[in-house]
Length: 306
Image (cartoon, rainbow, N blue to C red; front, side, top):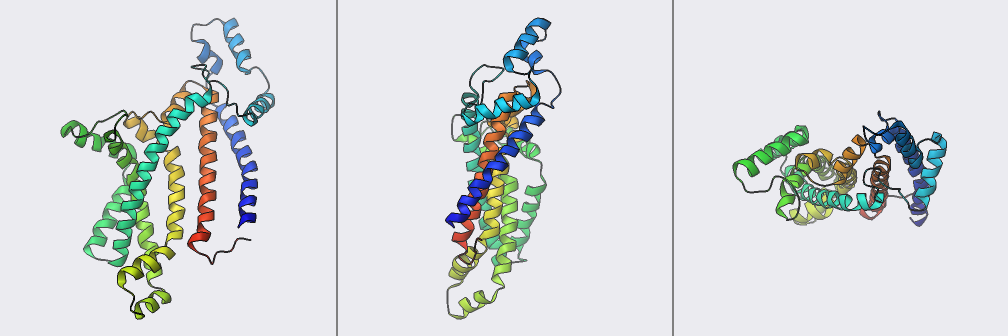
């Protein structure tokens, strides 16, 4: 296990280098002149060239990438071309807002998705199973922005129970977290049901029941534990997807997260902030995948890493 972990950590290096190269290239393919965006529409050509030189945009692309990687290894993500503040100071508070929202959404999705999936698997083809899978289909199919607007219309505009935007209290988390969790809840419910049904049909479950073990112990201790591997995989992937894909939810509910920051930075041609945001999300996503792979061995001791 220790050898496997070290090898996976070592493999992170080329992955992150590749991500850095792709982000660097794609950001510079965006239309528009970042020097003009920073200098202003009415700036003189001389001042625009001065800004371009100050930002290092007059250097060849390989030189710019070298400077970017050098600063990155030093822990310096640069300065925002809009605010002139360090990129880390721009990203960190926004990232925490997105992380809190994602954690709440994933917790809701895990709790309600697994409960729905387990009960559906224990009582397959029952009325509860049909209702659960029906709402799961709606959760998967409903666009995030549409669901967010519907929830806002019902609970904020019509009923006035919950705030429609902003942060500050626990009540501000409810609508955006439920919106963000809807699709993940549906996916986890369907995956839990499918995995549980497969495990419940195996021989050792029949053997456990023949020994007189209670049905709840069979379902939770024997079946659910062995059905967790695909569920954990979905959870790891969904956490990364929610972190990077919360931009629609953040836009609908005016949530000051990293998704909105990235969109604003792309529109303003703020290269350092875009690069820093994407790299942070990429590193976190890779680390989540590593954690999920390691968790497999604890859930199923039969798994051997070579």
